[in-house]
Length: 163
Image 1 (cartoon, rainbow, N blue to C red):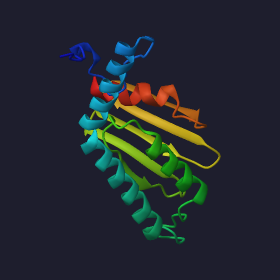
Image 2: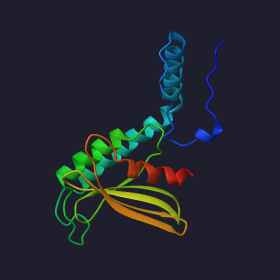
Image 3: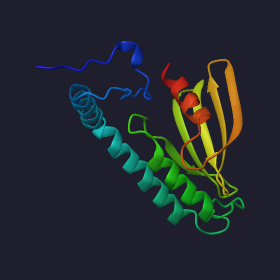
């Protein structure tokens, strides 16, 4: 019997084994590890569906001017499409973000663990992501461009929440 073990130092939600080997045994082991990750992440996949459902509900609730009673803009369709694409692009090992609509019509996703351990992204039109994070006394913020995949800076900041 062959067993695959993942060392404890690889507990980051973004660790994925490499597949540099070419032998039949290595390919079989890689397939096994891939299936194991899929099996272990089923509950998180459900969470991604919950985030998407929350996004769809917010589109319906916030689709008119002044939806908050304070002059908020309706959900920007481009921001909505980018947010949907962003949520679908998240690895299955990432915990579910809370979804919100900003007063300017952009979509925000937030990972909140405790008052001083928070990371938030605001997804705008034209593939722009603004982000901010608080990690104890440390702060970070910036802008990234979301094209075919989620930028590394975003993953690095989400990963910081788990360390």
